[in-house]
Length: 125
Image (tube, rainbow, N blue to C red; front, side, top):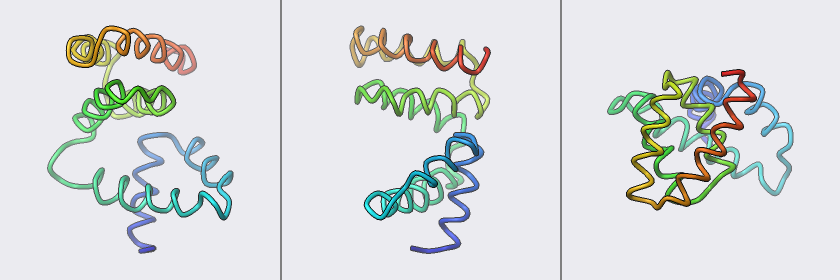
């Protein structure tokens, strides 16, 4: 593990997903899954999210659409929160999910709307 890359990724991960969530994930990690936490933090959150080519808002839009397509509700909820933290509005997220209804299927989009509503309620928005 590259300690500098991990720390830079950790900073970004906390900014996008929220420090409480990230810190709880790391605290809950054990010998079995800590290597995955390190991998995700170093490569996903540093090497990709910190690249200059796309801003965080755009990366969030892409992630939401991919997570709908992959049917990953837990990650979708997490990235809805991250999208809000990255400056997307409920209306922006609505548009992403409407677009996914055409390309990923209506059932996937309906589930995504349902999951996002839970996040919005939790966030008080």
